[in-house]
Image 1: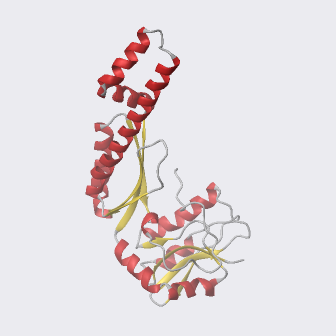
Image 2 (image 1 turned 180 degrees about the horizontal axis):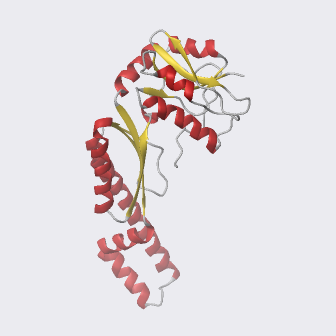
Image 3 (image 1 turned 90 degrees about the vertical axis):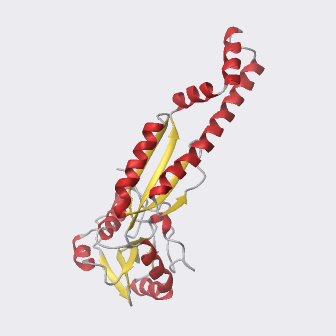
Length: 261
């Protein structure tokens, strides 16, 4: 069957066992959540379903367990789909990686993650790049007066517009990061975004969360052509640095376990 691992926390995490008794995790029916301890560390686990798929219900269950545990103390979230062969294998990983997990718990204590995705409002950004470039405006007007211009003229103009939009994306990515990192403890860039300026996670102290959200609102107002989407507060998924090895028999997840409502 295996042991499904949601996250790692300190064995003295406040109210750990009382909250675990009330939670249900992944699976159909949902599995009961329990706690395994090894020295100063604890793993939040349940029995693993025989078939686990990254469906919405299981992803939300994974996320819910971590969020509930994180309300009372720091938790290192494991990726969705982390499965050890059994309880003994899960606790042996706690022992083997104790130094790493302890360091991460201390470093991340009192912080949460905010995931920020920024994209362009297509029509608005086109108006902006045209407004900023006399050359683009002149070429656009020349093509218009020529009845649309030749095929070569249209291709040339299109390539220039694409280049201008990409340059604007790069500038906006820098500004988004510089604006928001002032209210953050650490920053983790996601995969290279495709078709949007930024996909960045910020580690934010809980007592700075209001300041961070205020900064995102200022960003929206200052740049109405940007679509700024903020997800959080979340467990610090992007700031759990990998240890020396994955749990024996683990099944890598296809997602870090977060789902938008």
